[in-house]
Amino acid sequence: MLRTIFWFLYFFGFLLYSIPTLNRVKKLDLTLNVQERDKIIHQLPQHWAKRLVEITSSQVQVNGTENLPDGPVLFVSNHQGNFDIPVLLGYVNKPMGFISKVEVQKIPIVPRWMEVMNCVFINRKDRRQAILSIKEGAEKLKKGHSLVIFPEGTRSKGGEVAEFKAGSLRLATDSGVPIVPIAINGTYKIMEHGGLFMKPSNVEVSILPPIVGTENRNVKELAKELQTLISKKITP
Image 1 (cartoon, rainbow, N blue to C red):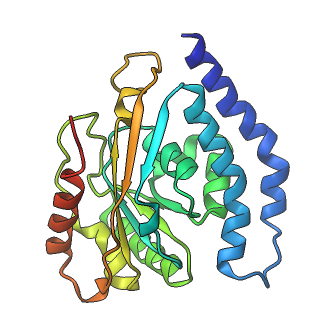
Image 2 (cartoon, one colour):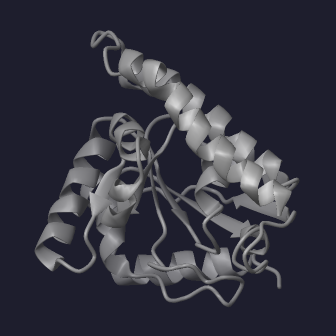
């Protein structure tokens, strides 16, 4: 119980503390290249996210870091729980934004950070808006930013990996960037499996070899391939 209380105090307290840095990174020198800007912007969110995981006393093991290419990529990951985002942000050493549901915009300060991190908000209830969000994400990838999608569309909470929705993979086929599959195992045990309180978990993150030449791929076939690759790395 005390761990959970402290977690929420830190979550919101750090957001308030981060406001001056947020204002500074919004004014970064526009002559910096994309990679340099994203690296600077990523520093504080990465520290915050890693600390959020550490507060739960969870241990995170990352395998396959050699599979991280230079330049922009589309990370495609399964989605076990709410801690998937801080685990990826805190422990995968590459600046990234997220394709996020619009409901996140209701959290104080967080959306402002997400904007400078080049995240894209998507309204899954509005098909037209969702298509525009995919186009916006593809443009960000073309400009050199990396993004993360969870093509299951919802948390599995420790169950089997659900069917990947093919539409979101147009981010890769429209932009031509490599896809880096990521398998996350164990995050659901921190929150979704623990009732009202957070509990420690051993989390394993497996970064799989990138898939290139995505601009020529059928998105439905690509979705099935990625679901199979990631599912093989998930253990009960």
